[in-house]
Length: 213
Ligand code: GAR
Image (cartoon, rainbow, N blue to C red; front, side, top):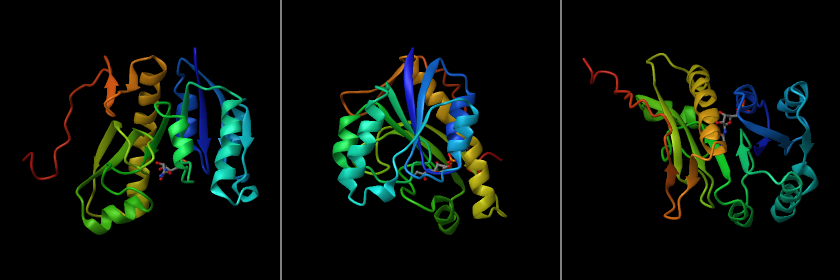
């Protein structure tokens, strides 16, 4: 059975979605870069081992990345899933785990990389927004895309309402991507894209509001 380490920084709802998805994978540990991450309590309630690699103890990025590497390697995981992990990881770290490091991001990448994605989506007036699961590469939020979910932006949406609907979709697609990986159906291809076999795509399409009348 494949094993998984999940990295969090805060609430941990994506981590909980992974835990509750009953994957045929062992969740070896939840690691946080903040001691006060709410998700740590939820992980403990699920009986999962937790670790804190406190970023305040490692002001230099290289030292933090090295401590995080040590913590992760103690579990020798097949996959490392970033779930709301809000710290940029250095190139050496990312290269070390190439092909086994994935992330969920709250936008339809490559649109809106970085922070405040919902606010920026509203400011830009996009009509379709969503979320992306991708392999992590050295270029932030630009790694090969595994799966995306799109939702309509409604005329009266606020940053909060939009974030809530996108989050629901994150909770749907992240476990799906992790399931493909842990079942051996998904991998980073040597060409830099993804190889995904028999993923069960249903071919459904979301049209921009107004186009399908
Ligand atoms: C999620 O929306 C996740 O996509 C986002 O932070 C939130 C964490 O929520 N991650 C990023 O923005 C990473 N760039 P959670 O802690 O409840 O999973």
